[in-house]
Amino acid sequence: MVKRRIIIVALLVPMLFIMSCDDINHPTIPYKKVDFIIYPNDVMYYRLNTYGGYEYFTGGVNGIVVYRLDEWSFYAFDRACSYDWENPDSWLWMHPNGIMLIDSCCGSIFNILDGSVVSGPARYELRQYYTRYDGWQLRVYN
Image (cartoon, rainbow, N blue to C red):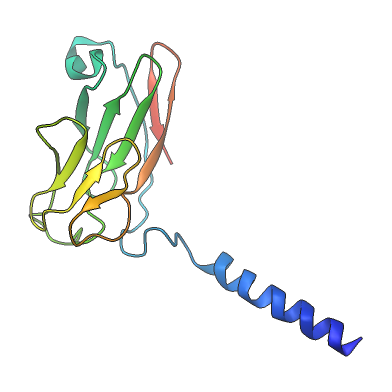
């Protein structure tokens, strides 16, 4: 009986530790509530009218970039680099190739499709927000 309890505790303690790590993929970037709606087909967001288009928005920690992959798929990421987000001069900008984001200060490069680190001192992926598109409006939220 005691042996069984020791085994159960030995199995549960690591699980509790892992579950208690708040936002383990983003240990440096603080959580900010995001919830807004845009209309990608509006001329105001002309860059989102085409596949591979993107727009910058306010919100999150350092702003948000929304990327349109195809007719129904949108990706939204915070423009805060996971390496130096506290630096007031650090912003993520779309790389000229149109599929990567680059940090203006540390030079870290991230993939726009999944937020993963391509190169640079950053070790953690970008904070991603949920998107829901109904053919008319796009909701970006967490």
